Length: 127
Image 1 (tube, helix red, strand yellow):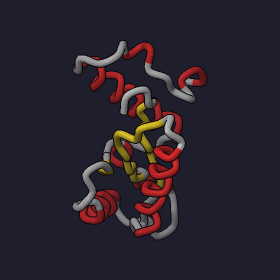
Image 2 (image 1 turned 90 degrees about the vertical axis):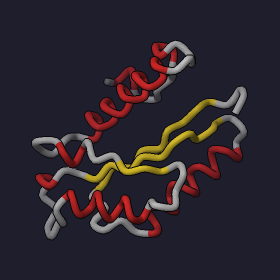
Image 3 (image 1 turned 135 degrees about the vertical axis):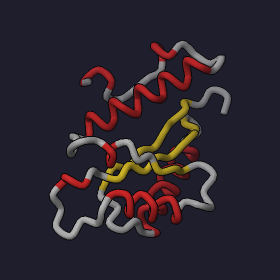
Image 4 (image 1 turned 90 degrees about the horizontal axis):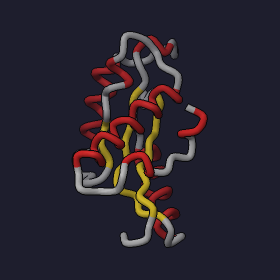
């Protein structure tokens, strides 16, 4: 991982239900980024949307989170984060990105790692 830029992959969506293709997207993205030699994917996060999203026939978020957790039981690098689904209302994707960016900065600050203010973020300037 030396000299590679650490990357966290995040997928927001309904996951109604989660499918093998959702999981495959993570694998393909990770493989591509690793093949460039520039990036090291350190984590994948699945973020199911809030119940108030308004999609017809949307299954309750606690069920979608549970299904995703079951689908990811064998993954050692992708996890489900229920934060978005637990909010009081639907959130724009940029707000979900801000949340996860903040969580990443907090976790790096607790480790003996790089200065959190120097962690690159493609969209940080727009936030």
